[in-house]
Image 1 (cartoon, rainbow, N blue to C red):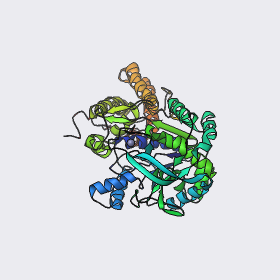
Image 2 (cartoon, protein in one colour; image 1 turned 90 degrees about the vertical axis):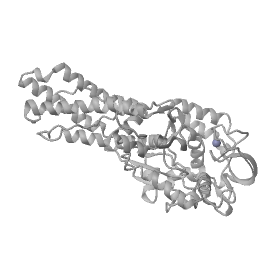
Image 3 (spheres, protein in one colour; image 1 turned 30 degrees about the horizontal axis):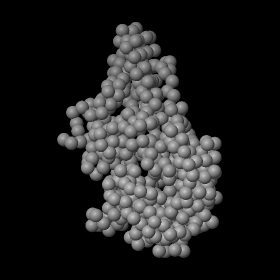
Image 4 (tube, rainbow, N blue to C red; image 1 turned 120 degrees about the horizontal axis):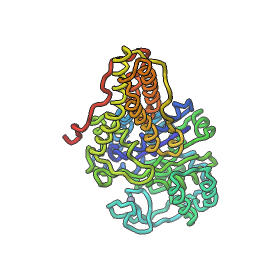
Length: 470
Ligand SMILES: [Zn+2]
C-alpha cells in the first residue's frame, strides 16, 4: 500500500492540523505493515509555494533559509509524534523532483496552450477566483493579475473523471466528499492556468520547460511529488504495480487531488491513485488555527508537556470521520487520564500485580478470548475513531472481566484461569494498540512479557496537573 499525506507549504512551523494528518497516515501504515503487507508511507514539504516567498520577505530572511528551517521542523515531527514515514520529499531539494515535474509537463504537452489571462488571485490559496473576497477566509485582498499563462485542457477530461469517480476506481471518502467532487466535475470543467510569471513568483519555483519567463504553477509542482519522489525501481513498484495508492488530505485541497491531479495523470498517460481520504479541520480553543494559537496548537510543545501517547490518543479517539473538531488541552488531559491512566494503565497494573500476588509472577496458560477487535473494517473505511473505540472495547471488557471473576476470591485453579485470560488480553492489546500508540504498546508488551512477569510499574502518569501554558 502506498500512503501519502499532502506536502504542506512551509511558511511557518507545523501545527496540530498537520499532526492529525500525519498520525492518521501513520496508523494506516503501521496497521498494514503489521499484517505483513508491503507499505510505503510518504510525506514531505511544499518548498516552492509563493507563500514561502512572502513569509521570507516579511521575516527579512532569504527564502532558502526560511524554507530549510521550517521544512526541518516538519521532518522533525517524526521523533516527537512517533511517525514511521519511509520518505520525506522536499520539493526544492529532492534530487529527482524537478526533472520529474518537467517530465510530466512535457508528457501533457498536447493539452497545454498559452492564453492571456486576467483574474483575481488569492496568495493564501494560491488560486484564482472570479471575485473577492477569498471564499476560504484569507484576509489579504485578492490581487488583480493580468498575464500570459500556460493553460491545461482540464475540460477535455470531464467525462473520464466523472467515470473514474462514479465507478469507484478512484474511491473518495467520506461519501459526502465524493458527491462534492462529482457535483464539481459534472457542473462543467474549465481549463486551468498552470503557470505564472517568474517575476510574480520572485524567481522561486520550477521554470516552465522551454519558457523560462514562466514558473510551473505551485499546485502542479506539489501534486507531482507523489510520483517524482519515486525514483528508479520505486516508481515501478509503488506507482505502476501497487494496487492501493491512497492520498490523505484536508478538505481544503480536495479539488486539486480529486480533479486536477487525476486529469494531469490521465493526460500524461500515468497510472492513477486509487483512493482519497479527506479529513475535516481542527480548531483550537474554538478558533481556526493560526500563528496566534501559539503553543496550544504546537504538536511538539504538546508532546513535551503531555507525552506522545496522550497527543496521539486525542487525535485518534476524539476526531470524528466527518466534522470539524475543537481541541483544548483540558479535553486532551481528560481523555488521556480516563482512557490511558484509568482504563489501560489500571488494567495492566492490576493484572500484573495479581499475577505476582497469587502466582509468584508466573504466567498461566492463555485462557479464552475476551472480545473481537474489529480494527480492519474501521480502518478500511478510514474511520480512525471507530478503530480506536474498537481497540478500547477490549480494555473495557477486560476490566469488566476482573470485576466479574474477582480472581482474589477464587481458589488457585480459578485464579490461574482468570489471570491466564487477562494476561492474554493484555498481550493482545499490546499488539492491537501498536498502530495507534506505538510507545504505550511497547510498554504494555514489556509489562506482560515472558513466562514470569517483571514487577508492576505504573504505565501512565496522570496528567490533570500539568500544562503547556504553565
Ligand atoms: Zn484564499
